[in-house]
Each structure stands twice: as C-alpha cells, then as structure tokens.
Image (tube, rainbow, N blue to C red; front, side, top):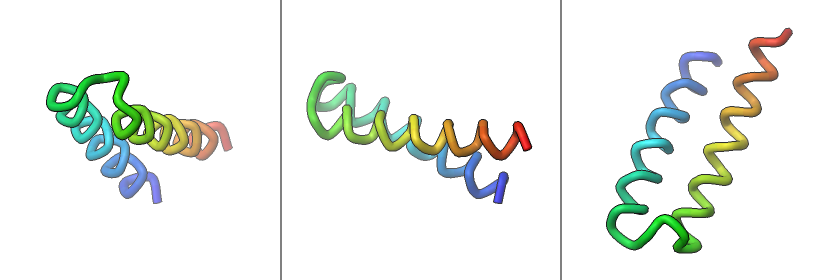
Length: 50
C-alpha cells in the first residue's frame, strides 16, 4: 500500500505542477489536484505513524 501511495503522491505532484504552469496555480482545477494531493499525503503520514 505504501508504494502505491508514494506513486500516487508523486503523480499528483507532477500533475499539479504541470496544470498550474498551464492554467495557473490558483485555477480551480489546480486547487482540486492540490487538495487531493494533501489527502494522499495525510493518508501516507498516518500509515507511517502506525
């Protein structure tokens, strides 16, 4: 599970940067990806704490 989370985190990070550069970092699509990335990072952090 950790490897899949790490892969998803890296993918979303790259996607967020690419979308941000193309349409702006404050665009709703970029913000949505950022929020999803936050969720994945929080989930990963919780799995590491246990």
